[in-house]
Image (cartoon, rainbow, N blue to C red):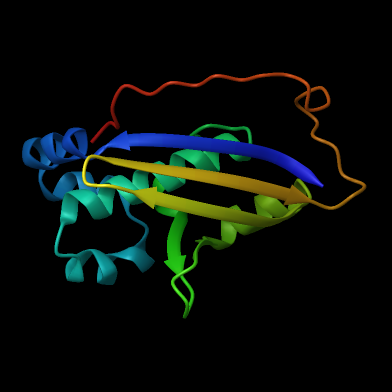
Length: 150
C-alpha cells in the first residue's frame, strides 16, 4: 500500500552556485557518512550534490514530514545496487522511525540532464497501516523550496 509519494527537481546551476559560495560546508550539510566516498570520487561535485539533494527532498515529501528529525540529509544515504538502481540506506534512528510508521519499503527514481535533476520516491507501508497525520490519499500537497541552507 502506498504511504506517500514525493518528487523534487533541482537546477544543477543553483547547486553549483551554492557549492562555490559554501564550499565543503554544503557537502557536510547534505551528505550522510556513507556518501563521502562516492562524493570524493565524483568528477562533477555539483551534479552529485544536486542528485543527493533532490532524492532526499523527495524522500522527505514521500514520508510526509519534510526535513525534520529524524528525517534529515545526514540520516538518509543514496546508494546504488550492482545494476545501478538507486535506493536508500537509513541511519538506525531513521530506520526505527520508519518502522514505527509501518513504512517497510521505499523506491527511488532519479533522472538527470546537464541542467536539471529530478527525483521521485514512493514510500510503501504494510497493508493494515494508515497515516495518522492525513486523510486518505485524496489530498494534494504542494511544497516548494528556494535553496538548501548550508
